[in-house]
Amino acid sequence: MIKEIKNICCLGAGYVGGPTMSVIADKCPAIDVNVVDINPNRIEKWNNPNLSDLPIFEPGLYEILKKCLNRNLFFSSDIKEKIANADMVFISVNSPTKLKGIGAGMACDIKWIELSARQIAKYSRGNTIVVEKSTVPVGTAEIIKKILKESQEEDYKNNIDQKTFSILSNPEFLSEGSAINDLCNPDRILIGGDNEESIKALENIYLNWIEEKKILRTNLWSSELSKLTANAFLAQRISSINSIGAICELSGANINEVSKAIGMDSRLGSKFLQSGPGFGGSCFPKDILNLIYIAKFYGLNEVASYWSTVIELNNWHKKRISQIIIQKLFGTISGKKIAILGFAFKANTNDTRESPAINICKDLIEEGSKLFIYDPQVSALQIEKDLDFKQIKNKSSEQSGWIFANSIEEASTNSDAIVVLTEWEEFKNLNWENLFKIMRKPSWIFDTRNISNTTRAKELGFNIWKVGNNNII
Ligand code: NAD
Ligand code: UGA
Image 1 (cartoon, protein in one colour):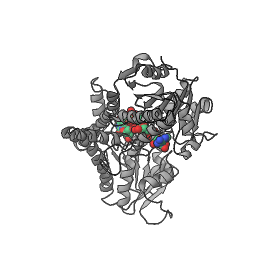
Image 2 (cartoon, protein in one colour):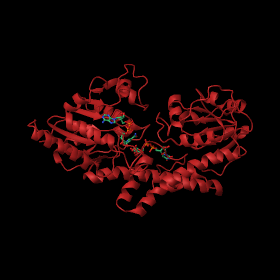
Image 3 (cartoon, helix red, strand yellow):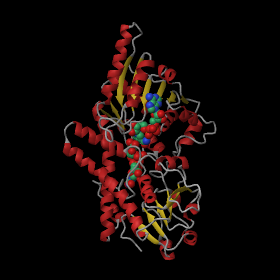
């Protein structure tokens, strides 16, 4: 019999758990959706009654929370009770790269997934459908199954009421910054599993707002591997276009023109061909590393080295940008003030995980410059953690390092250069007249996103470098 889902518990109130469960609560008012987290501070922020200072910034999220929070969407630290009451438990916890031990720097650390499985084994009651939403190495569902099976056997020995479980893989394909739209209008919903009734129960939730033809069923392992593969293919396109951008800069070609020309080929498509400072984010680097590790594990060394080049090119490209900035500023940036516009790994998010800005800023500080960093959504505290470097206290000191700026103008005053690192809307049409007055001469603009309209800047006498362009001086 197909189970009617009335109560959901989601483990993990992060960038995936928060928005995904908010959309489910919005689209399925008859279901109670409980999001739990082992981090009480995160839960406290989601429950802030003014909906201010939310743990994540995501356009459209606030409006949904306003409707659903404490109606049928609840954030809580009571993991035990929420799992016990749930018909379906989603695992949306972090799955980062391992930092030590076997496979360090490459393999996925599934310790939070394992902990989630143990919590479900301990607290669940009756029949529970477990949905793996985190991105995991292929085969992880087997580990979850084993943990749950062991707990069933223990209960049987101790004459405790039998619990039953079924496991599904349902990876998430949302992108940060457009998460709400991606969740409301996904290209596809992927469900991997072998239990027909559980698959149907999950499908029924999605059918509240998604057409049936968009729901794709596979076996568990294809589902897990498809998620890693999708991210690897997307990241590969970015490394490819950035590699061609480097040729453009030296040959007189223009990367926007090349992207457009190849993107019009329907076999290639136009998306993910935007040259930038290199890909960042919590997932592309870690998921490709995970794929490389899996290939090595199976003895497929050529496959591993093929995917390694995507990461190598990305690292080379970030370094290349720092070196160009230094070289253009007469080969030395010691004591020079540089305005950094944007620190998030992409626009419309406050997420800085693996942001290319981190490596580029570290390189520039290392060379002796003083950075004034402005990002409309990233806090000084976050930048301090990422750079692993405290802010300079005295703004007028000669010391190299960084200072938090509250506006574009504050960041740019007396600076030698502006470096655009994130494609925030407000960096597209900068007030060049004003900037030219307040900056030191010669004034430089380094646009690593190819987004700023520099026609007026050129007329005023700015020196301009744009990624992938035959640079206009
Ligand atoms: P995140 O770090 O923002 O959130 C994960 C949360 O899980 C944290 O708040 C953590 O405290 C909590 N947690 C860890 N173990 C727990 C447990 N046992 N019980 C309850 N809570 C627990 O991570 P995220 O960005 O939301 O990513 C989650 C997963 O989704 C990862 O596997 C990631 O690869 C995948 N993913 C992320 C994105 C994205 O855009 N961020 C998109 C698709 C898939
Ligand atoms: C990415 C995928 O797009 C999602 O489908 C996936 O669910 C998610 O990873 C995940 O598994 O976490 P996300 O990292 O949020 O989403 O953001 P993207 O829009 O993919 O951007 C990733 C990086 O690539 C950013 O640094 C972005 O600036 C860069 N990028 C993207 C480019 O440099 N050029 C492009 O054309 C597109």
